[in-house]
Amino acid sequence: MTQSQRDAPLAPSDPALRAARGAVTAAYAAQGLGYAVIVTSLPALKARQDVGDDVVTILVLGVAITAALGSVIANAIAVRWGSRTALTLGLLVQAIALPVIALPTPFPVFAAAFAVFGVGLGCVDAAAAMQGVAVQRSYGRHLLGGFFAAATAAAIAGALLVSWVALSAVGAGVALACAAAIALGVALAGLRFFAREVPIDEALPAAERAKLPRAGIWAFGLVILAVFVADSAVSTWSTVYLQDDLAALAWIAPLGYAAYQAVVLITRLATDRLVPAVGRGRLVAVAASVSAVGCVIIALLPFPAAAIVGFALAGVSAGVLIPVTFGAAGDLAPEHSDQVIARVNLFNYAGAILGAVVVGVLADGPGLGLAFLLPAVALAAILFAVPRFRTASSPAGVTAPATGASETDPRSR
Image (cartoon, rainbow, N blue to C red):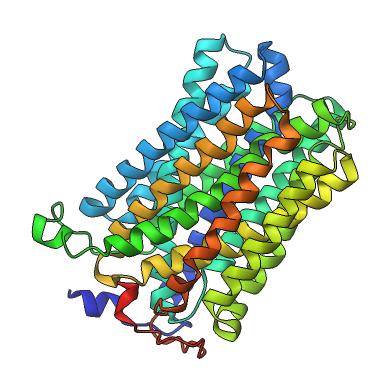
């Protein structure tokens, strides 16, 4: 089967295509739930292990490093066996690691489980994006916003689940066990229903690697880095900041992350319609600006209500920019979209290190509140990349609006 045959749009009514879309949506949801339960359980896990913020910072750094490894593994597996295999493996790894984190184990075992979870996290991040772009291309219209919206809806559910667990005092392990069971179920179902691809039998030769759009990979990768600086800072530290620094009640503290994810969900549900109506470039500029303002509010107004509003505004960037950027990256070189996406996804973890680890380090100096000026600066820098989005092409069958630049401008390559 040729690449053009694989990329040819199928009818949306095709049962296999509908099943693949549903399975990929479920994979995004399982990823969002598992990660949300982990990050909003950090205060409880920190207390159970009797460690401080510095140890949490090291754990988050370890997860970022092993997640980058997971993304590389996903690329290697996708090249030989297809992204459906990589996605299934990543979910299974998470399903193994989460129950170990939930158990009252010695700290070395606890830390090792976090590292293993990171491998699964990175594998799912990369492979789910590969699958999402493949299904989107088959449909011939924008779908990534909806996929990421499923992850966000599940993340909100995860945050609220942890809030209920804290209120009822049943223990954080219950939420982690639920996330593990869902990841396992989606992995088993995905063996049958994830989008089937024709994998490449061997790694790309040097001549083929030279054809990858390196300039575009770096441009979109740096946007992903900036977005994840903000996303990781909010995901990792919002609950800790509200509970420890602003003295919010235990059941209120997770609501900052819930507010963030609520806005992410709303914007992601709208993104697939806004992209063709407004244009990628204009949408990116607005989202980056609004989120930068939100981070400034968090930094300068140290009150629980103001912080929650700031976290909500910060959610606009993750809601819009992540699906739009991965969609634009996948369109750079459709014949090598899995390889392009895997490379762009690596910038995710550099952003996670800056957003979670550096913000954690700054917590010991100026404090967590002022540390949110870091993601504000990173988000503002995205404005320099807006021209790249104006020249990015659209998925097969999608008509893009006129935005002052040709959608097939060779500068996008």
